[in-house]
Length: 138
Image (cartoon, rainbow, N blue to C red; front, side, top):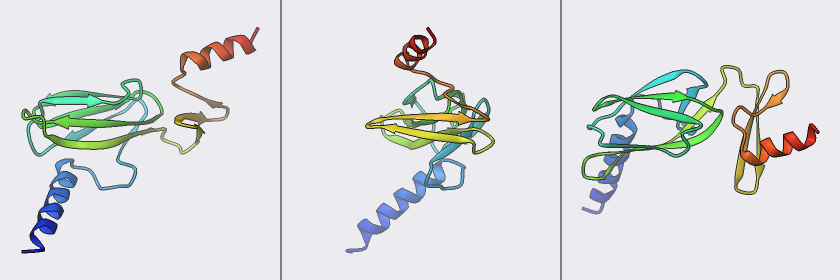
């Protein structure tokens, strides 16, 4: 009986991993900038939450099909809940370029991803970055 909780935990982990029809990876769900990716889930979704909608967007195709679109470079998360409020999917979403020409800048808790082809630029700029660039340009 001691192995029953382990089996239940393993079954739950397998169910979550197989809930999305994508290969398991340490990076989560990878989406290419300005492209869409289909995410199939095992149970009907009731609520879909994207951590930062400036990085990725999710739209409902049907109750078990979600379309993720990469909008800006970076990392956010996708949470899908069933009608009882239980999580079906809780995964990181990584939006990248087709080419791996990017750099991540870490400033304490803030992370900024720059696309470097040929110059390093951010596709999503915070208000502080815009203000700083405007002041530097004067």
